[in-house]
Length: 394
Image 1: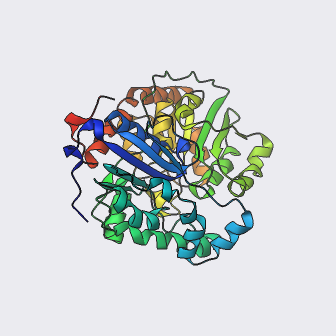
Image 2 (image 1 turned 135 degrees about the vertical axis):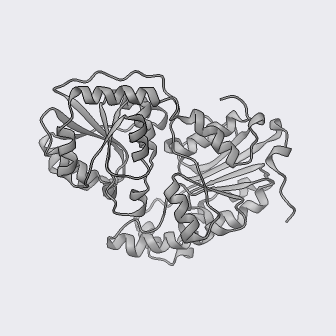
Image 3 (image 1 turned 45 degrees about the horizontal axis):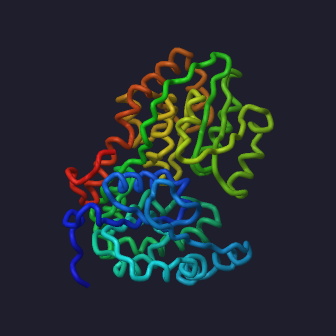
């Protein structure tokens, strides 16, 4: 295969990028940022993904289909990994539509498409191919479904991350980059944080008798929503927890049956689109990001919800998460809970006064511009080999 041209050798007006992910691209904040950053740097961006088209991508849209039958999905999940991949992913990829296309840059997100990517992308790419691993995909559960259905498949997919097809790897946090280097033998991935776009908002006022707690994002009991709900039953009456979460029936059912929901101490709210999150959060006071160290992803969590909360001008309540603690200590927009139980969390919240909460919200407002995509964009473009002088202003 002929050597690929460096991205910087191709005139800006002729550059075309392909961004691919196995998520519904319109609800994926990290992929949304990639598309915006590349478009702002002069690329026409094509998107290969599931779900609706993305409003910020000016190129073509290629949609990945999926099995619709529940019984077919169950059958496929019981198959060996390669057969499972062929049945659930490969057969639904728009390979014919992509034939003959050439891209100056390809960005692959997470691990779901990798067996196809390592074979198909060399024919599509005439420039760098970057694999953004996002988080970790191993040791993220203990139940039987995870151990016998999810884990073996993820372990098989991860075999492809060292393919020479990829010229660079990215991830979301320093600790995760270390794990990919030390345990998977990769050159240490570049860290691109899950920052959110800057929003010109003011902190909302705090009602001393109605302090509004929120947790948003994907519903995942493994990431501590169960502890947050337990804690809401131990809080002073001035607090109420709102869950603005996405999930399927399996993930939402145990949350909806929790006593905190029945008692009115916690309440579900409809989630919003990725571009509306910060504005929707602005009506709340404190974001709970309480990830007990059950799995490596929890330990090294530095999620987009953290940066979205800052843009929403909220105070942030966290546990002793090593990736987040330095931000709280530097910018003073949150509280660190010592201990991982519901009583630890409730105790820390019950000690807060209205003045404390106001101080945190105004500190978030002060830090919002610095902790936004405005700074992270340049790191992303640099990691992809795009020279600063060639990038258009954002």
